[in-house]
Length: 193
Image (cartoon, rainbow, N blue to C red; front, side):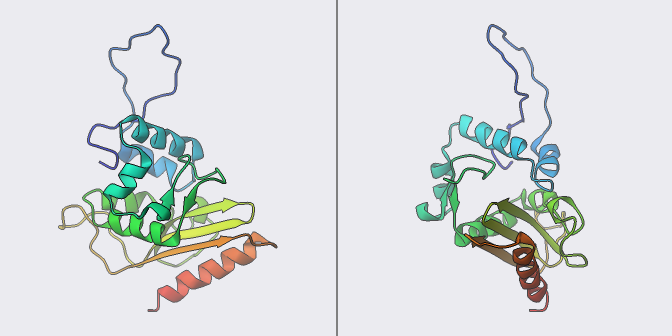
């Protein structure tokens, strides 16, 4: 799986003085579609902390998939900290890495799509699966442009021709709608390459 074969989302409860015999929870396949399209920061933070609790630091995980140290420096799992840092190269590398893994189809099919989640009012009619980021003065759009199939004969990986896009705009002033329009136009242009 994304964070290991046995990773399960555990409910946040006070377990002091209690020894649980069994905790039932949703699988990563059930959690990702609830986390990614609406950009559920609580679930993202929970997944990040579970991965960290599993013994791998974000830095060692990033190095293990070939990310350069200056391309990815997370502080939290939601991306809400101003100390989180990722480059467009880091984002593109992660998307490329995910697409080539056996769980790539699950990841891609869990992303927001035009008309759904954070893309509900964006990119109508465009074949796109991706993720948005919105903070004051920061707007990002990244993902896969083109036909994506969640299952295939290629080890569960999608078989399609697609482009990976990673657009990050920092320190802008003015309406975010203008930035979204520019990002969306870039993605639309990629569909004609």
